[in-house]
Length: 112
Ligand SMILES: NC(=O)c1ccc[n+]([C@@H]2O[C@H](COP(=O)([O-])OP(=O)(O)OC[C@H]3O[C@@H](n4cnc5c(N)ncnc54)[C@H](OP(=O)(O)O)[C@@H]3O)[C@@H](O)[C@H]2O)c1
Image (cartoon, rainbow, N blue to C red; front, top):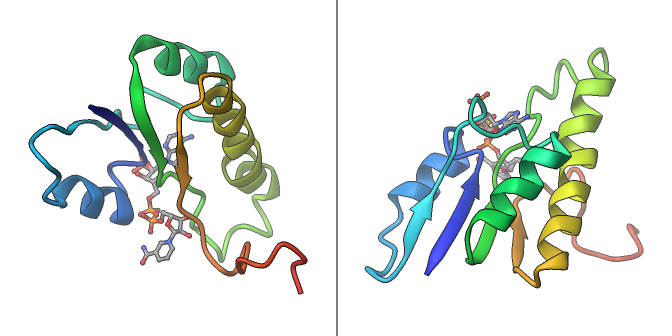
């Protein structure tokens, strides 16, 4: 089975690539230069390219100290890109695993 890892060059992505996956798993981890996940058309192309068993998104805007001065950049990566990925994977019924932080979503639907 083929699994697509996004943000494979980051801390979480690097650990995901190093994980001892079963031999049946083939990982694909394009870097940002190959795939900008805020580019809807590029995401659509890679989702259509293979019969992915799952997509794992470990790409994120993580420069928290800069987020308040780079609001647009943070929003594109942490809000727009997950929405693009969710729509593209949902259309092909591909499971999407989105790695985030409890600073963004604490796991309760009410947000309380
Ligand atoms: N690290 C932790 O201990 C930890 C703990 C809990 C939760 N998390 C969560 O896990 C997620 C990833 O964290 P991290 O620490 O691995 O972050 P990171 O080291 O900053 O890695 C982020 C990755 O996203 C890539 N990226 C940035 N913009 C992109 C774009 N437009 N298109 C495609 N890829 C892009 C970066 O590529 P470049 O290398 O080219 O910039 C980098 O590989 C975040 O949501 C974070 O909150 C992390």
